[in-house]
Structures are given as structure tokens and as C-alpha cells.
Amino acid sequence: MGESRPDKGDMAGNTDEANAISNDRIGPIAISNASENPAKQAGSGNTGNTGIRDGDSSEELSAFLSEPPAWYRRQAEECIRQGIPERLLRPLGVAVAYHVLGNTHRWAEVLPHIEAALKDRNGR
Image: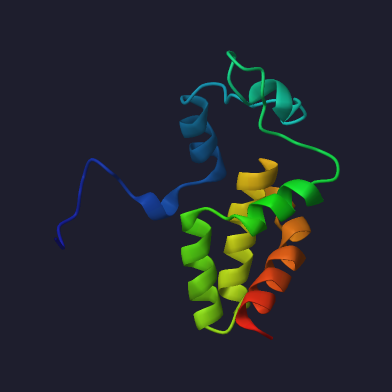
């Protein structure tokens, strides 16, 4: 293990110029177009449904919370059992936002509803 590797040379002496030459051999770097509308990229070509939903989602969320799937019930019970800590509440919000709204970044919209439902279910 303590042997010197002659094929690597002195790595500590790399200069910016040496790094630039090395990086030049890699070739051009592909850059994605981040401004592209994700709705155009997402979804199935068969249905045209992008999974991205806008607008008022309170009805969908209410329906979800009134008859939640098994995965949500398991997570909600564990969250209640542990006192509804933020470390469990936020990931649950992310999952619900994805399931109901099709967008994990909208977790803050659903979080107050989830928290209220959990507290109601817990009798607080």
C-alpha cells in the first residue's frame, strides 16, 4: 500500500495549466436547457397527461386525505406515534404532493392540511 505509483506522477504538483490540458481531452460538456418547460418533457405520449397540475388542489387533497392509500396510512400512523415530528412530516408532505399534485416541490402547499389531518386523527 505504501508503494509509490510511477504511472501517476506527482499529483500534488498539478497546476491550473495541467488541469486545463487534462480537462480539454474530455471534450465538450453537454448543457441541458433548464428553461425548457418540464410539462413538455414529462408524461406519456399515449395519454398526453404530464402529471403536472396547477390551480386549486384542495378538492383533490381532501379526497386523498379522506380515503388515503395504505402507504400514507402507515406513514401517518408512524408520524403520530412519534409525536408528529418535522423530520417525518416534511417527507410525508413531499410524497403527498407528488401523489396528489404530481410535483414534489409543492410540499409546502399540502403540509398544513396533512398536519391538521394528523392532529385531528390523533385527537389533539
